[in-house]
Length: 279
Image (cartoon, rainbow, N blue to C red):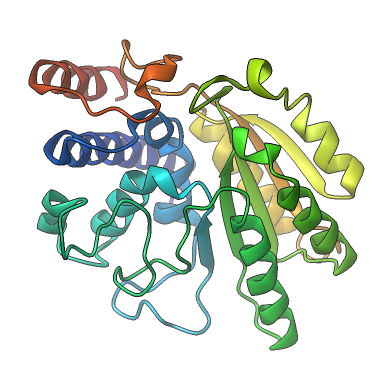
């Protein structure tokens, strides 16, 4: 696909993801919009361009795998899965309902396309390392992608997993940090400063990139670079600078929207802003 057409398509998909996630959270009257919106552009690039997947065969053995380590932002993952056709789109209206496949955190036993149940922050990278090791052992060409929050890097297990990924030269692993600067109780700088995450992962031995996580051209370019560097013997890390609540003016950089659903008026405003502002 011509580059400009691809970028336009992915921006459109990011807008659809944002609108779908907002609809789910509004209707459920529960959920996490801030981190869902900050990750939307990255998720669009992954699910509509980069990941090797088959919605008709979610358990395909040679698929790329995706780990949503910050499992509380599952509305953005469910949006991607719905728009890719892993389950009927109408299912989005059942978020967090009893018996739904779309629970408040991803459940691999219920939801097609979910590769690992997540929610306990800090554990997702370790799961991704295990998956990447398994692919290496079985001589499969598939890759593993893990998305985590910057506040999540407060957990020591993230760095233990990074050490293991370097030790085993897992160049089939791509870790993406949604670096929006906020976590549940406030700013990352106030709660536990993350400092320079790119430098930290680089010091651990990872091949690290820093990008604007809302610039689709940068996202596509860095994913291409990583694809071309496969075989370097180092795990890859993308530190994506993002804005919590991106696309909705009153949600942007506002910690209160970490885990709060919009009311009817707020939802109407948010949907209009996403539709008009992210074309």
